[in-house]
Image 1 (tube, rainbow, N blue to C red):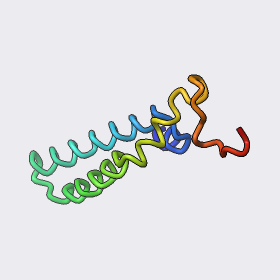
Image 2 (cartoon, one colour):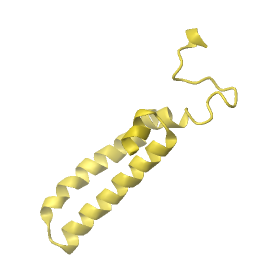
Image 3 (cartoon, rainbow, N blue to C red):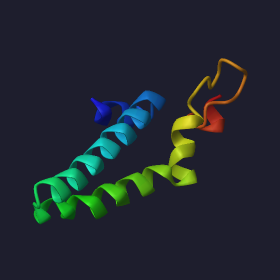
Length: 84
């Protein structure tokens, strides 16, 4: 579901992806600590890297620029200037 939102550059998809990744990170950490399953630690750098990527200003801007674009007279960045 979050993949669909990310592909559509929707804010809900962005927020859902961040939430899912955060829960996954906490789950991996809890499994490593409570169950002594050190194999789950491989998910920490992977999830952390994905969260860091999504929080980069350029990537975050792709999703925040779409909010209300066109509604407030703000040009939609996804539409080339020649076609506006």
